[in-house]
Image (tube, rainbow, N blue to C red):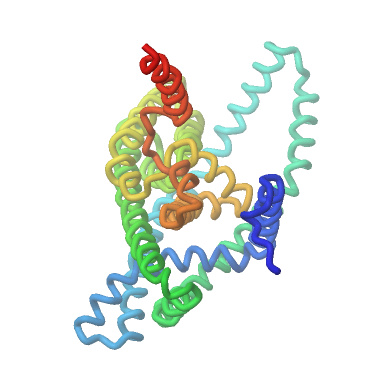
Length: 372
């Protein structure tokens, strides 16, 4: 005789769910080198799928259609990298001058710390050396992260090509793994997932282009060196929800500090980025990105931090579309609908406790009316 988990007491159900989550997280961490490229490839394959379908409708063979779609993607990425590389070369030519100015600023900062806090310069240098020693492990992790990124870049085209090639096989598996009575739910989930991911990625790209243009224009007008490069890097960092925009401000402020005297430029950069972030968060994101993926701000911040803890920077980028897919699934399963509502951004006007109390008050009043 089989025993269903949902028929058990709450503490048994919660223990089973917690154990399952711990096992799932452990597996995802251990298999990160395999799962991260697959996740990126799945999202990019979904993005390229409409172009492949359009080419096939024009009698282009499937393999050739996939190759053309991937070629278009590679050319677009190559153009962006070429533009950024030309800016990086110019930045590299100025490194000796920037390093000399940075050393001068460092000397002034050490003197200010000595005069203000009474910490000897030799002690400051020792503290800096200790910090550098402690950061060696972090540098090692960064190098490993670079190699992992290179591995992803080389594996992505292969994964994307094969996913598009075996799309029908994968879809048929998803239909067959569930019972026939759930076919409509599976179809709805797959259709909404495809639409949500496509719209989300396209929305992010549009947002990134607009933010890059605003960042670059502001930095060029303020006279910050390499403003176009720093503005584009800031737009890429801005893809990390809520946290990337804050990190992006440090780059132009540091560059202005190294290349300019005084602090007026730094103040101008901070004000300009605050205005850009306000436009981005209140106009661009709600109309271009959030309208496609209905995840509330609280859950967005939490899942981004969890994604960072799970898969690092890759996890931060993947967290929002991944949770959007989970929400679509939750909204289609009756027992999981409360979790879907928790992830969503529809704020109810009244909580259920108030409704329950109002019903109780009405029940308490009705007998008195009947007696009178």
